[in-house]
Amino acid sequence: MAVMCVIVTALYSCKSPSTVAFYTFETECVTDVMDGSVVLKAWGQGSSRSDAVEQAKRQAVRDIIFKGVQKGSCTYKPLLFEVNAEEKYQDYFNRFFSRDGAYADFVKMDATKMGSGEKNVSKTRDSYALIVRVLRADLEKKLIDDNILRK
Image 1 (cartoon, rainbow, N blue to C red):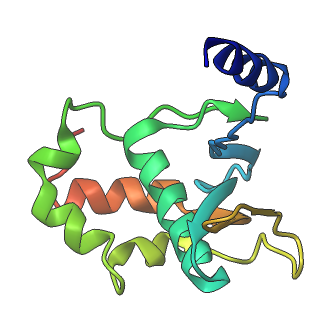
Image 2 (tube, rainbow, N blue to C red):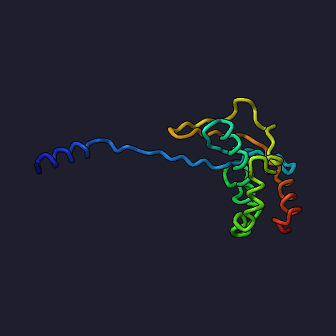
Image 3 (spheres, rainbow, N blue to C red):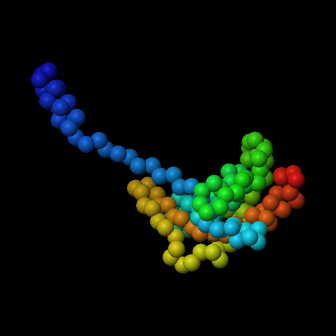
């Protein structure tokens, strides 16, 4: 019996290890338009292309507000530096990022050409890259007007 265990262990140890790939997609700056807006490449994931596209739009705006953009041809600091701002203003941001929320007013698709999105397929969901223009200056003004951002 001990010999059998050694043989089985030896066989399994010769097998190449299986790898599991996890992808993280970071929003990156494509170009600064110099009119208060920025063109970004943002990723979204979903069970359908339309779900992934909407998530990519939300992610682009969310990164401009909370995280900033450090990757790509230009960099931006986040609009909100306040620690835990998303939790502090949770009701506001839940409405803002809801299905028919105001976030969509600050994302323009004019930077996107048909068929320009990248697709990354996994077993559980599809990921799409979307090139969008985010109206950063208008977004900043909205946050100031709504007393979320203090200047």
